[in-house]
Amino acid sequence: MCGIVGYIGDKDVTTLLLEGLKRLEYRGYDSAGVAVLKNNSLLISKEEGKIARLEKNIPETMQKARMGIAHTRWATHGEPSQKNAHPHLDTSRKIAVVHNGIIENFSHLKKKLQGEGFTFSSDTDSEVLPNLISKYYDGNLEKAVQKALLDIEGTYGILVICEDEPDTIVTARNGSPVVLGIGETDMFIASDTSAIVAYTRNVIYLEDHEMAVVKADHYKTMHISARETTKEIHEIDWDIGKIEKNGYEHFMLKEIFEQPETIENAFRGRILLEEGISKLGGFQLSVEGLHNIKRILIIACGTSYYSGLVGEYIVEDIAGIPVEVEYASEFRYRNPIIEDSTMVLVISQSGETADTLAALREARRKGAKVYGITNVVGSTIARETDGGIYIHAGPEIGVASTKAFTSQVVALILITLAIGRRHHLSQEKAQEIIKELKGLPQKIQSVLNQSDKIQKLAEKFYDYNHALYLGRGYNYPVALEGALKLKEISYIHAEGYPAAEMKHGPIALIDENMPVIVIATASNILEKVISNIQEVKARKGQVIAIATEGNESLAEYCDEVIYVPKVLEVVSPIVNVIPLQLFAYYIAVLRGCSVDQPRNLAKSVTVE
Ligand code: M6R
Image (cartoon, rainbow, N blue to C red; front, side):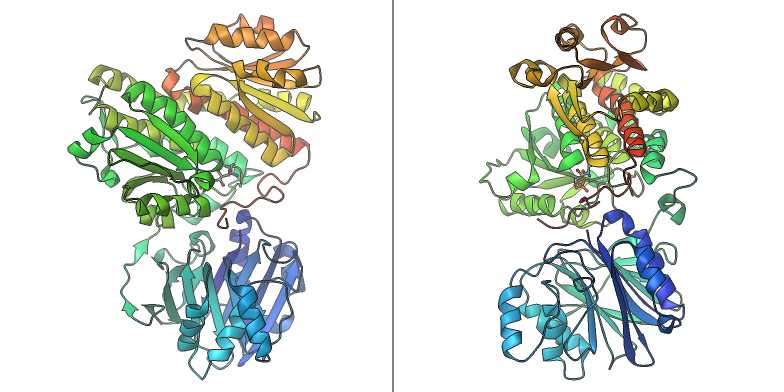
């Protein structure tokens, strides 16, 4: 999705803004632009396509400015093109704006402004902003922005500069994140801390309907109604190394290989073996509160939804509490039933996904207490939930979510331990799970050590056009996740199914051109899965099985077998997904795809 960066201070602004934009590339974009103020004049450069192109074409005259704003655009209104790229200027070309979000009443505002003599040169909704601000501008940018925002319906994260106020950037947010970085002698503003962490770790997060007036040595924040607000300064707890590739060819590969560490980070300091419990400080639920939970409703999108599905198996099996999992995009427009004893749990890596955020707000409107599992500290979802846990996976840059999935499942196990021990879960069983969690990083490493073998397998299958992923029980959601990984980064059509469901339709697709990836690890229904494998083989399908070490007999029925260590079924999704992530990664590389930024996709989907 779109990204914004702004800077005011003594560094070379164009270089810094381009650096910041590059740090936001992972979010997905189709055009980019920069505007700087130099010698009281606005200079602007925009390009369709990659930031490298923008950088190459930046005029010499834009160097050595001390204040500016920049943007990466992910098209919503109007095709990707230079004219639709941000920053946008007002008719008098004195005010420049970058905007993330969607102005819902833009066509009404545009018509009105055109009637008043303002002109437009793009197809975007965003261009109404500079003109609206210009309409209200009478020498005070702060006031003009406030007035303009009161006319706006929709979401925004904006940066505004004006030729007449060369020492000021005005920023505001509603539904689109804005973070302000406080430097020693300068200020940074961005939609994502990744853009500014190289320069400062001290940040403040704007709330919805809040704005800031930023100068190089000073800032003030206020509600858009003009009431001043006070902000807490937060310290970012990770460093620039976390958003660099560190020798890996792609972020996705780096993030897959980080999993022994990220999994450990998710449970470190949160489990007490002797008592068989988890301690979740941010969860904010009393013993009584935990005891009163009679139903859990999990809401999420994409990979986070699939980890939620794994959570359904875990919680029902281990804690004995009924769980429903729902797509956030569906939940937000239904009339869901939420009783007092229902715990709503939203899962989001980014903490900014628009559908998940809307579902969270809908659930709260209905009186529910909503808890969250998020990765990004200070994200909107993290701040709007009543409590929750961070997975501490560090920044996930690859658009395909990998380490977040495994850490989300760990978080769901921790929550299950917390709730389960107040319900049906015995101390002994909880201790068994905790021991298994502790041994996981090593077992994950042993799967990663097979990456060469998985790469060879990818060489055999990268040219196929379809793939079917099958799993049962705990590993049915893993089949869905494996298929999502393959389709989103390699553009191969892939579907995930509960293995036994295959005979109700998908079996018609099976022939020698259909690779079928089957998760066939140890479980009480393994024999049933083996029958499903035989059904595939009987129709000449090619079977790649994920099997438990020691189960040599599977090789008799399957074309290829990847062995993974034996683990308790409750943690098996965490282990079994790793070969599927690697398989998708190597196939995408072999097909020459843009692994970290697949086409049409964005890292955090902040539009509906
Ligand atoms: O940030 P979130 O977890 O809320 O994101 C949800 C989905 O957009 C995300 O998981 C998406 O499906 C990924 N591209 C999957 O790899």
